[in-house]
Figure 1: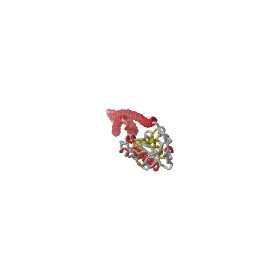
Figure 2: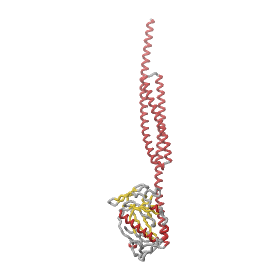
Figure 3: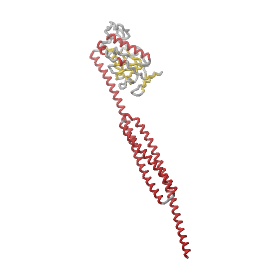
Figure 4: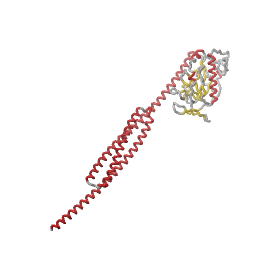
Length: 413
């Protein structure tokens, strides 16, 4: 354990290194990392206000500012993790340590400070050398009085809040000293480097130390208000960043969804144009078929062409049905766009599915077009054969007519 910085106007009476967590204010069932790495967590005694507090600062952000009361309970929930509830701060703090020994040392100090607070609140007077009767003096925390005002302010604290236990965040410390901490709620894994910890207390707070003078009430009040403002500013900044990230994500999802809808709409318009083209081609084939029937062409060719036309007609009806389904999908996607904040991911999957369906439909259209071209080529070939047969038949008829005339002439002579 090491000594921390002069946060409250005097050196801390106890300092350790730990990862700091806050309970999720929304779910109350998961932990949110309050520090990016192991930070100093210190016990302070405010001689002006007769209060013990636990304070931790990371950079300019105060991650812990908790006033200890006799009703507080620190609960060890795993081998290296513990928590306590602070009704005044309306939150639950969690600490993750590198070793179980460090956690046990913190628990011992917490109990000592809480016991000192309870005894002083019960009218226990300190001795001349600063030690409190009935408590084993370990640091100056046991030698500092706590006013009746602090004790009476905390008597109504809800004991059930201090007993609210949460599963500790999963922490695995490897041999190199790197702690991997996974926390639900804010999503993500933060990898932090644990700090080397050593035991010790500030020499300024040994028994009989009289070098640190108490702060004036005005200065102490200003420092207390400053800590509160730091906490409020840190919370406001964190919320602002979180909403900025969520807003950027929603904007990105909106752009992607709009682009996909526009592309899908363009594909539907293309399908409609192709379908109209197939309808016109079908009508043209019907007309040519009627012409072939009028010319009394080959019966087998007409039957084959009729089958091909029926197949193409069925294919066109199928494509019309699929096009109707896709129109319905477009309408559903427009509804999904209005609810993109809740259904962004399913909409993207549906768009991908539509894109795949579009590719399949385009392939089907290409195949149908190839079949139409083949049918047209076969029809042209049949027509040429019929024309040839018709010409041959006309020639034979002319020959028979000439023979008939010659025979008639011969009979008359």
